[in-house]
Each structure stands twice: as C-alpha cells, then as structure tokens.
Image 1 (tube, rainbow, N blue to C red):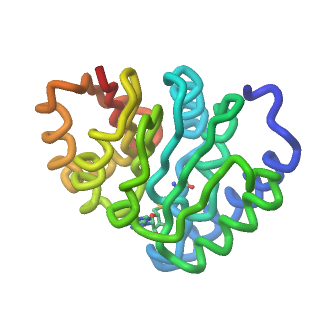
Image 2: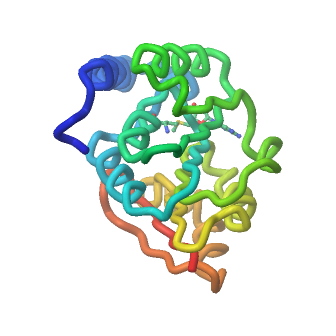
Length: 195
Ligand SMILES: C[S@@+](CC[C@H](N)C(=O)[O-])C[C@H]1O[C@@H](n2cnc3c(N)ncnc32)[C@H](O)[C@@H]1O
C-alpha cells in the first residue's frame, strides 16, 4: 500500500502538510487551520482500514481531504469512502484534492453534518471520527448502529483532548457490542471494534 502511493497523492499530501505546518506556525485561527492528522496516524488508519471487513468507509471531518487520502489507499475494489464536512472553504479544498488525485469516483464528499445525513449509511466497515470534540459522543452513538460485524470506529484526539472526548469514550467502553483500546500514536487514536 505505502510502496505504491500514486504521485498525484504524494504531491497533494506534501502540499497539504506544508499548509498545515505553515498555519500552525504563523498563528492562523483554529477554525481556519486544516488541523490534519500527522502522517504516522494516516498510515495507522490505512493499515486498520485495509483489514476491516468488506463495506463502506465513513469519515466525519474532511477538512482538505488529507486523512481521506490515507484512507483511500485501503479501499478495495467496489468500496467507497463517504466523508462529511461543513465548512465551505474546506469543502472547496477537499474537492480540489479529490479531483487532483483522481479520487472523485471513490470518495463521496457530503457537504453537511453527519448528524443530519446518517440515514442512508449501513454496513460501514470503517469509521473515522475527527470533527469538533463535543460532537464525538453523538457521532459514536449514531455510527455504532451502522457498523458491520467486525467493523472499526476510530476517534482521533484520544490523548491530546482526552477530557473533551471522555463522554464518548465512556459510552463506547460501556457498549457491550464493542471492544475498545486507546493507541498512543499521533494525538491518540481510540479504536473500537464492533463484535
Ligand atoms: C480536525 S479537522 C479534520 C482533519 C481531517 N480529518 C484530516 O486529518 O485531514 C475537523 C474538521 O471537522 C469539520 N467539522 C466540524 N463539525 C463537523 C460536523 N458536524 N460534520 C462534519 N464536519 C465537521 C471542521 O470544519 C473541520 O474541517
């Protein structure tokens, strides 16, 4: 997977990493920044997603499409990623990302909140939660019912924003349908497997 990343994807990842680095350094406001996962988290997500059961991938919080590109490496024949984003500036950048990387057929960018657009989702094999932290608990509650057997829900920021996402962690660990663990990679990935 990582040995065969198309040049268009490598170039776009490098471009988005440079923007993210610059904006973190120059004090760009939090909501304007891309707030992307680091590359090692991208690799971790792709490895997990590649071993998820057959089904669709979902991402909540597209930003400019950086983590979606990592997840796209794990898509198998006939599988798609559906990714949700609410900010128009980020949606524009993400559309550019998916167009430049020839991914428009494989990645469905939904312009809106998962919480208003979840009805059509089913048999989800992999879900990445990376939106505003106060929404994690509601996102988990919605996605828990949409997962295929063996499917994975992964939530970002499990160590750097542990206090903010603690309600979601409590909900998940008390849900007997899921086995969960926090992995200290990047900003902390909270990994839940649906039985
Ligand atoms: C941390 S960034 C996502 C970074 C992206 N996953 C990456 O690593 O490339 C969070 C994004 O979630 C978006 N967002 C916030 N609330 C949302 C919601 N309710 N539904 C979908 N996206 C949302 C924000 O606009 C922001 O772009």
